[in-house]
Length: 310
Ligand code: NDP
Image (tube, rainbow, N blue to C red):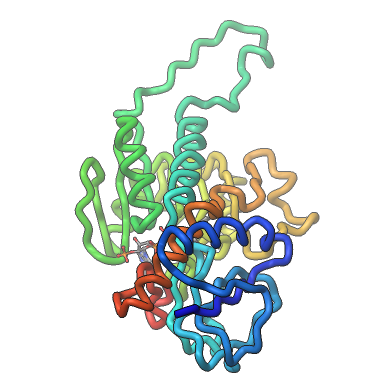
């Protein structure tokens, strides 16, 4: 039976995703009519990426699932018209990209790669960083991305302290949870990586109180979501040296406004939400597999718990 699949992404994404989705459908044995336009009542599945075009999902009465191309879900699942099941993107390419971004920036901080002491002073100043085994990295969020990043860092010999909502066991990673667990992680984290989703419970997880728990001069990486950080608290902590440097990929407002103090701050690196990107070929396979599962009456992969918020 043919299923009608609406591609509800940006126009520019269509020529990229159309061929990869068609190939993935064929490989998964999914017979699909894939288009950018349908009468809403005829749609069986929606492949969704925020584009601003599809805000009211009410007319999609036949739709069995909305299949997201993004890992983050805070925009779509707070849409009250989303009554259909929603799956988010967990994709091998996305995970690999995040591991590379996190490992790269952790090593940059660990090895002080930004420092250029010799050139500045023209003096042969020997600065030997500790071995990774003597450097503690905190990872807040041990989900699909955080757990793999934590394991990669552990593989580089870092002392990795992770934190999640529920108790976990990950080889090579000291796992913590709950309020006390957060304090334990922060108290040790010379480098802190934020890989939490944005929910009511995680907003401002890094605030004036929690930032004060970090060892003085800690470095922060935020590839998670902008609202995880209280920006005023971070700017104050950067000013006092409580936080030595921050590399921020995500912001409350994106693009980051031109007059935002982060742009000019000497101890902040801004990257434009590029920590990791959904890869069309592997992501299309995930979408096709979920349609195959749905049609076969099997449970969907990566179904979002709307009540939990991620
Ligand atoms: P997951 O949903 O797989 O994992 C979320 C993790 O956060 C889980 O370990 C979860 O705990 C933990 N968590 C959630 N709420 C709390 C809480 N209140 N207290 C403690 N821990 C909590 O997400 P992913 O790993 O796939 O992605 C993480 C985030 O990364 C995304 O939500 C998105 O915002 C961001 N992202 C950014 C990208 C970029 O390019 N900058 C690209 C892709 C994603 P538990 O395991 O107990 O449920």
